[in-house]
Amino acid sequence: MDTHVVILISIMIVAGGFGGFLNYLHGFDTISVDKKGMPAGLRYTLLGIGSAFLVPAFLKMIASDLVNRHSSDVDYLIFAGFCLIAAIFSRRFIGTIGEKVLEAANSAKKAAEEAKKGLEATQNQVSSNAERIETVKLAVDLNTIQKDSFQANSSREDALQELVDTFISRTSIPDYAKRLKVKAELGRKMGEIIVRNNLPATDLLARNQSEGMLLALAYAVQLRPDENSLSILKNISGLATQLYTRYSILVSFDTLARNNFITKSEAQEIENIIKGFHKGADDSLLRKIEDSLNILRFILA
Image 1 (cartoon, helix red, strand yellow):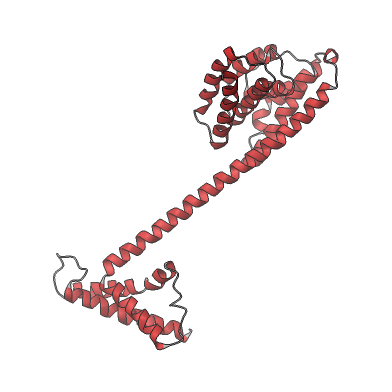
Image 2 (cartoon, rainbow, N blue to C red):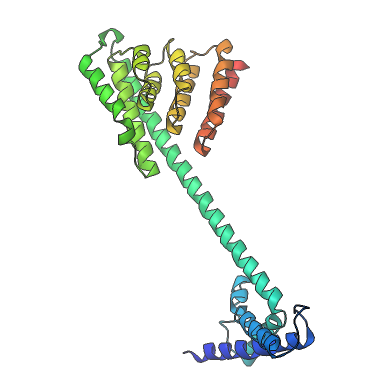
């Protein structure tokens, strides 16, 4: 063992024991009900030694390098003085160090939780931005196709139904970012099937009100908003339970607002629907709710 470490340990034992015994003799930091005698004296001596062994931790907390310095005997004397003071006021010193350690641990835990939330919010925002880019690309592609060319196709409707029925199982992924990505991909694919094949949204909703179908209809509105879209969104808003589906519905409301499909008389009702999404919302959804409400305020102004 390094000689320096041996000297420090010796100082902590000697100064700690001596300080603890002084505390016992003079009652600097003792319990008033303690009776004088060997058991109490030994207890305070050991308590002093224990306090002295906490001095290196205390010096580390105040960013002192005294423990690492051993350039002169003065450093050892200063260290011994710290140990003696800690031992004399052992009960208070131990309590203070304990509180500081717990406070530091709680601060570290809080910082870690905030960092995790920030990361999740960033991942969600990145996913949302990527989703919007893909939506714009798809919308441009759809605009090149004549609306009259869309014909309801039973095989495509079957494909949509298969995606809707397996939506929950496909998106039951523990990883948050991957789960959002899969939901976005499925939502776009289902919405594209509805729009490309001109499938009647009202009939689809009447036959199936599962979370997958609600998401599909929300994406269909984003891809091709029209005068019937607002009614569809109002119907599915009260049925959606998953946060991502609600987020997509808000994006669809924004799409209608930007394309002048929401009138001033309708905006108040939509505002109440959107405010209803506050219940159980996470940070990402709360931010989206506020964004959507700001868009509606321009209509109401």
